[in-house]
Image 1 (tube, helix red, strand yellow):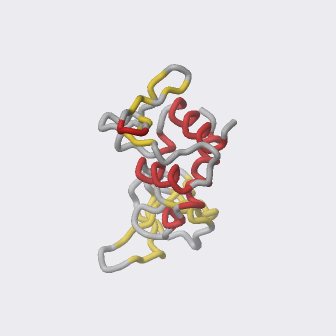
Image 2 (image 1 turned 135 degrees about the vertical axis):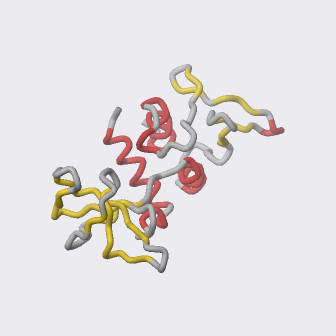
Image 3 (image 1 turned 90 degrees about the horizontal axis):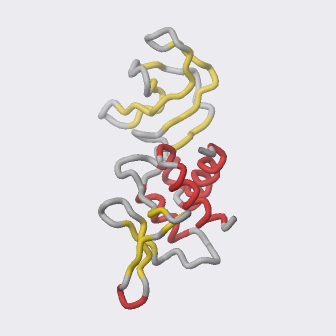
Length: 156
């Protein structure tokens, strides 16, 4: 799968939904000063930890090891995982030559196009029904869904 396409999609979606980058519970950050986790591995990827009394941006935990670590600084806010809801909102907000406002998702995760009069059809990409893996963020979706979304936004 093209990591470059995923990065481009994430960047475009973050432009139209800037709240994805809010530094709060569930947000991912990058810290250049790597620390050892509980397994002795160097790590530089963290998630924001909230103690329940309010946001404490000083306390960070390693999302893989689960150990609470306090890095010296946060170098970049990466944002929370991008969800299906974010993608649908972005498809509505991103300026496009193709009319994207008539796209919906069925309860099984399949993308559909709603036509005038309420008729609908499954959207296909390379003759395959496009399905979002429900409860799974954008970066963990199939190559087919990434290619499909990328083609909608970038028209390549």
